[in-house]
Image: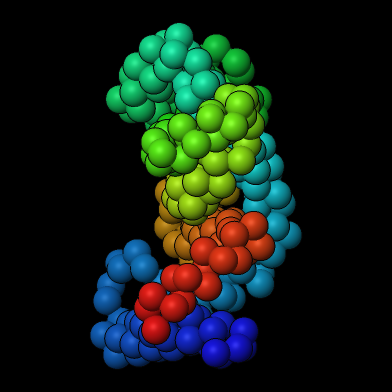
Length: 262
């Protein structure tokens, strides 16, 4: 099966299903015209995107900056933490309970606290929410991949006098890559959710979160949904980047999955 056939096989079913849902959605609202219904037809949302394009684009840039910076730093901290707990017992005894404790905290509830600490309109407060939400999935998945290696393989490398860092580089990191990319696909959407919800509590007022709340409060649901669509596009784009990166870094992994499912 060539690349075009693989892309078609993967993307055509959800695309056809999505278009069918939109057509049914439009037809139902046109037929019933429910009074006071807060979900406008897709054509109204598309019109709102066109009419308020400059506002939606600026808001996407503001929220996108928070998402990308928070996502990048959260991934970095998660990977470094996983490497440390794998290599050093003291780090494992210190960082693992701390990471579990952080994950138990309702992270979104910390947004007002961060706003008071860092500043109500500063992006750092919302970035901190994104970092905390991204950190735990990356940390846990990467650490699992680094530690779940064959004992025989480790002992074989040690018998050839391989250093611990060589074992990490040659054995543990390649084994952890599938776990890491699984976490990456999970946090791609989590980062978008964290940034937009954090913006409900503070940050710049020209971001996606305030646009959704302000327009929903004024019953301009088409514009509010247009901002929701913009956030969805960012999340889908980040997920797609994670998938492409996974296929570039681990082409053998994708090919083996294809052979298994064929």
